[in-house]
Length: 308
Image (cartoon, rainbow, N blue to C red):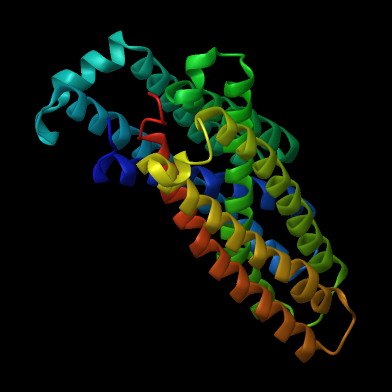
């Protein structure tokens, strides 16, 4: 079955929302000890940012499941409630969707309760565990689960999903939330700024390494031969995704080796500010490329691999 635009849009919304919450969680970890004005300001903004991401995840998942039931039953979208209810209660796909929705609701409640309690470590551990379970539930809906719940294919897909969300989330949150406050609230380079940027760069590099390793395995698993990249619609989308990943890696590499060193150095503040501004602009460009990658991933998730 080929993907439809509503299916792709709903899955992409989930992918982007999931990446955002992972990025917010990583930023919260790096900013646990708030010593400067920009750190405290960003930390206060992380709570509504997390809630917005969770709502986007839940909305995307609900729309994805609803649209899938409408397509499977060949019904109009607004008339799909009976098919939706049946799918959610009688099919493996529906059960996995219910599990993911329940986990997201629990995550919203945990966010509200632990945020008020100010429990830093407990908050991070609880939310991380819930997000890993959401990713596991999402994998059970995909093609890799056909090989078994604990198969190499399913585990690789789970790791790939988490690494992709981590990379994209780091870039999204840094480029659009954290770095703008750095530029506005602190003009001189400092230890806290360097620590955040170093963590951002190192975690992103580790996530990219995981993506490359698991992505190579997934491509080997689903493609019968390299010709499938050119002879199959699934292969076309996968090839475009791979090219976009290379572009995003190049942008990240530029920041890592050319943009960030200027921000680490104890230079006059205008020089450091210009360097940080360059890093922010590259991150925003990289984030747009990553959105396209997540859209391509949504297309692949809703399309049958070669031979299926």
